[in-house]
Image 1 (spheres, rainbow, N blue to C red):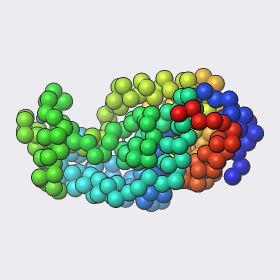
Image 2 (tube, helix red, strand yellow):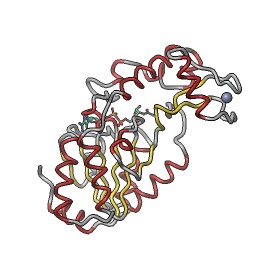
Image 3 (tube, rainbow, N blue to C red):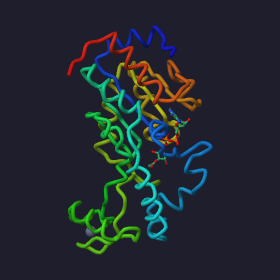
Length: 255
Ligand code: OAD
Ligand code: ZN
């Protein structure tokens, strides 16, 4: 796999490395992406499935769609890309994975420093943001109700999946962390994302503005392609294992 001399030099000396991942990171684990030919948003309308208005209008439809996605994700395993990143973390004093994915696969693979920008699909939340119900109670209620939308046993409101929907803001702590890591990065990888959804899409620009070497890993071009210092036009599940081999030759483990 062709990595440039510039990238290798940067990797050899870097203190801080950041990886921003998107749906393409999990494609090889069998989880569909959102955009592109086989993408979910090609088949379904986001405004009917991934907004609070849609959920209030038709909780049954939205809940069933999330049950289907949860089942898919429950059956999925981390791929070689996730596993390589978990190992790569050991070679840099600061190594952060920032993900737009809600599938928990970076965590399952063993990555420790993970920031979830769009939540986690397995989490259940009461839509009443003032409600103090515990997640254990909600999880039990959801399990009991199956494919029927559950109600919060404390306040009677609907129970929703813990993902960020269109029109909602990202968890404040997560975006703040992601911005700090991005500004500090010496090498920044953007992997498996169409780079079209803000504010995640702004992170590589923030990194580059602060001197990072930006590498895009994606078989297809995106709006970031012309801005990145380097592009690797292949799947993340192929590129990261190769990159790990290179790093293992260049560096010693730090943890
Ligand atoms: P997209 O579905 O928009 O983009 C996936 C990208 O992955 C595309 O650019 C593909 O070319 C690329 N790709 C496909 N297979 C790949 C592979 N094996 N390796 C590397 N790249 C590959 O997904 P995101 O950019 O993650 O929001 O989408 C951003 C957000 O939009 C999602 O988090 C979701 C969606 O609406 C929420 O759920 C809030
Ligand atoms: Zn409640």
